[in-house]
Length: 271
Image 1: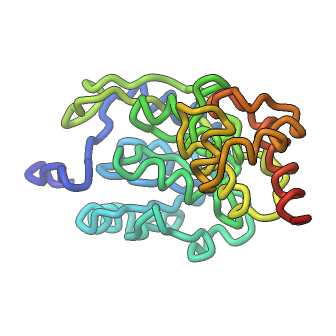
Image 2: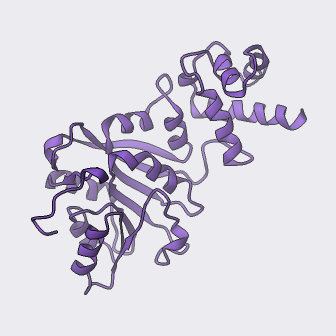
Image 3: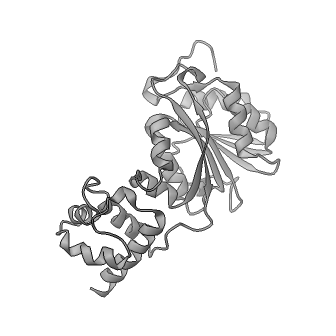
């Protein structure tokens, strides 16, 4: 990237420059030569060089047209690397022919404003990655990885598909320019099947969104707000799922959501 080109604030560009964090990310990805690696937001290529050295097939997804052009020029003589100018929030892996039906891994220093939608999009693909190693704003990472007692809709939406752990923390000085917030690298090992058995993912999220419609209320109260009914309409259903109508939505585990969904779906089907 030419030295005169400055990061674009409109795209939330903060380029990683701390080599120690680069090594932690690469180690966590456990890249094997035959792996297909999709890097989201390669930017100036802080991670890219190490990825290309380790894997024989690399797809770089860059939203910034100028950066995509720079990367295309840089790797023009490397047949193992392809650059795609695309938006990872809406990208379908079916449009990436190098992947096909083969396993693949995702690595990325994600822009803060788009991080959650990008992760959700990847996890909801028909052909999901086997794992993701992604840099996020610390608060978003905490919400994704939260345990019962502090869970929110993003926690449920992420843990439905993956098991998560923290790889490392990244302070503002690890980037150029330094952001005003701290960052966290997390590893998402994608489950072979979702944590909840559901009729359809849309029906599950209909319930989950209603469950967090008023998160400070009781579970019965929040569902009542979400479905425009009365709390009493849900008390029996919640108890039949083995839960307490008075508990807060944040206290439910993924198993609890599975039990609640099964009872709610059964009741809706027989209504």
